[in-house]
Amino acid sequence: MTLSLILDVRMMGHRLPRQLHALQRLAHSQAEPFELLVADDTGDARLPRLAERYGARLLPCEGTPLGDRLNAAVAHSQGNILIFPAADARLTPDWLAQVTERIERQQDDVAVFTARPLGRLARLHRRLRGQLPAETLCMARSWFERIGGFDPALDQEALPNLLERLYACQARIDRSSA
Image (cartoon, rainbow, N blue to C red; front, side, top):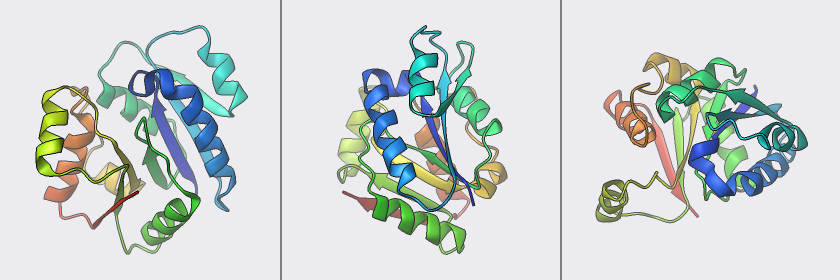
C-alpha cells in the first residue's frame, strides 16, 4: 500500500512550506511507502527548490480550476490511498495510521479529518465567504476512480462537491476531529 499526499499551491498559500515540512515528518513516521505531490499553477520560481527540499514531486499545471489540478495530481500519483490535506491540518501519526488501516481493510472508504468540529451554520458561512473547507480528505483510490474524481470545472467547491458525491454514493465515511 502506498499513500499519496496531494497538495495544491494555491490552496495552501503561504502555509505551503510549513505544511510540506509537517507532512514529510508525518509520512516518515508511517510504515507504508508515501509520496508527496504538489500541484502548481502559479509558476513561482522558488517552488522547485522547496519541493526538492521536502522530497515532493512538483506538478506544473496551467491556470485551471482546483478540481482539474487535483485530478492531474492524482493521475501522476501511485498511491492506493489518496490524502488531500487541508491548509491548516495538523494530522497526527495515530490518526493517519488508524484511517489508512481502516481503509486498507475496507472498513471505511473515506475518512474526513476536521481541525475543529464545524456545525452546518459554520460550514455554510465558510462556503458563502469563499473559504476552502478546513477538512482533510483521505480516501481509497478505488472510490476516487469510481465517482470520476473531482469535477474539473469546480474551483473552491471541488472538495465539498466530491464529498457530497461520496455521501450520495453511500461510501462509508468516517468523520473525526482534533
